[in-house]
Every structure is written in structure tokens, then in C-alpha cells.
Length: 193
Image 1 (cartoon, rainbow, N blue to C red):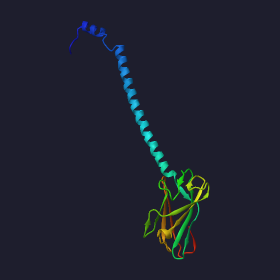
Image 2: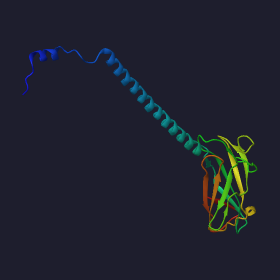
Image 3: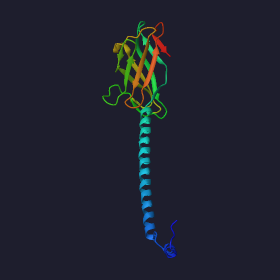
Image 4: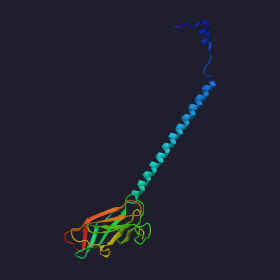
């Protein structure tokens, strides 16, 4: 073991070298600045992602808010062999946005499709008659509109024991699907529950 001279021990004990207050302050300020920048980045990223999440939720709500619902039976008239017309009443679901049911509109209009096992008619002709509310064909909260579809005029042949589907597709929001089966014998007026 190496021996240290006594004057060397005193010199080492009396050495007052180290970090000064100014150096300590600079290091602390650097830590604070780095922490502030890191906190800003984390908060900005969190705010950005929560904003994107909010946009996704609002887009989903907009997609489902235009929902209509059936408010009557589906009634079909026939000539004894095939259905000629189908009628039903619709209203908005709770909290739904207004739906344009004007069949003559060129933009932002509701389209009704007819589907059965042998044919598809993507844009079948229909009429909309206001029952309650104002006299226009814009379906608003609290209003009721009757939809009449001329199957014979559209070329759709619906006979006995036949299943068919009507898809009511508004310009925005989810669409409504009505699937019905005709009875074994067609009367003049048929209630298709």
C-alpha cells in the first residue's frame, strides 16, 4: 500500500474545488427547459389524438343520426296475381336529422331500392305524401310521411310466397331496410307484417 505524505492529505482536505452556484443554476435551468419541452410535446400529442377521436365520434353520429323508422304496417295492394303497390309510413328516430323525401329532387334525395331473388331495381319510383307536419316532403322531427311505391309501374313482379326487400337510403345517415314476404293468397289489400 502506498503511503501518502501528511502535507498531501492536508492539501486534499483543503481543496475547495467543486460546482459553483452558477453552474448548478445552469444545470437546473437546462433540466427545467427539457422537461417543459417534453411536457409540451406530450400535451400536444394528447390534444391532437383526442381531437381526432372526437372527429371520429362525430362522424359516426352523423352517419347514424339520419335514421328513419317505420311507424305503420306495410300495406300492399294487388291485382290478385301480383302486388301492384306497397305503402308504409315513416318518421324520424329520436334525435335524427331531417331527411329529404322529395322523389323529384336532383341532389340530396332519398333513393329506394327494390330487391328480390330474381331482380334488383336500384332506384324505384315512389311518391311521398305528408300526413302530419307541414305540407312539404322534408321529413322533420315529429312529422309522418306516407311512402307509396308503384311496383307494377317499375316492372317488379311480386307474386305469392315471395320475399322482397326495400332499402330506403337517405342522402346522409344510415338506411332503413324493410323485408317482407307475401302471403300464400293475395287479396286486394294485404297487410305484410
